[in-house]
Image 1: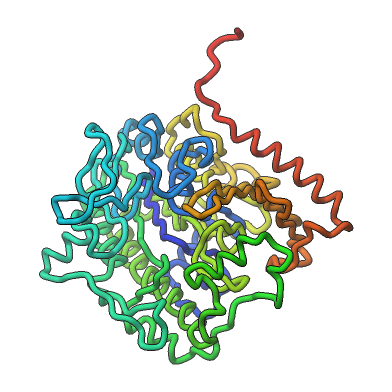
Image 2: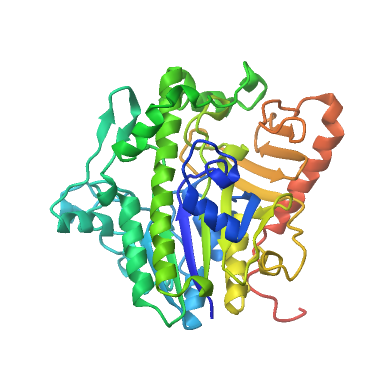
Length: 484
């Protein structure tokens, strides 16, 4: 039986690895992982936010179907996760770091905080997020490195060493900080726990989910990791944007930039480069810790029996189109993510270029690789025969993403995206203006063709395709058991 090591970062866009064309980051370990297995060039998240995306790739069900379409919601107890199915099949399943399938920003009276949210008594887990029967027998939860989650495994680990989590602001940019030293960083903590799990479970089938919080905004890499970029700061390119490009795009995008300073216009060119540098510096640290994990896997003799997966939950604007962070935005910057799968002797070395895949396809893919039947509620499909070379890599004609009031904007925003290899449409529901891009002519999505009469037929065709795809997200449950 194969083991599964699933490394998932938070908010890491596709173009942040050396193997994906970034000449600045230092990611030799992840690059080697990519060269030894399958590096997917076109994988898209089904949501640009954490909870909907994570719910999707752990259930193989679209966010709108399985109920997690917003941050701050709690997964329904009847949803079935990949680790639960694997645990029932004899796997030992563990997690370190973020889960985020339920609301995490409540307060506990026990710690002197203001309590404004409480789960029903039968589902209340003091100090962490609410859990269903998720299959994790080892669960070291840490939602975000900070002092507001005293029950997080990372906080307890720091406490055991007499250390308190703290960061110090960068003198030149208030949107980045110098973080904990490398030896005490949350990324390193996740690697330490992973190595311990690998060493303890040799000889039995296991599934381990590593959920590193970085490179999530606000960036706080160790000082020495950021200093390397500061020495070459002027070489870091500014993000693509066109003068006045938002004038014919939905008003939300202009409002988004104005809200809380979510745009590059609020910063100098030097500060914008620093923001990008700090984001990349966190990825460099991730690579070092991934290297440690892979060394432990090799030393334990389990490398050739373990499917290693490296991916992220969604992307990050990082200055593209003048925007930072994430929101009701379905640009590729926000939903195009890295995906690498490696298992020597099982997955041949390859780079899957053109085929499109959805991040939620990972759930049925892992189950097929493990020989475990998929759950009848799953909507996405396995690409295991394609990644192992049993069949040609054909992918999908289109990929789907959604944003249905996923954050508490006012007014609420509802968007549906359908992306092919040539065109991409984003419908802003309830509004007259949407987005349509010719990706071959305009890969940076700068020119909106929504109102261009020359593309009226294309828009009509793609609006019909969006309507079809939304219908196809209908829940397959409950299963039909009869004719009448």
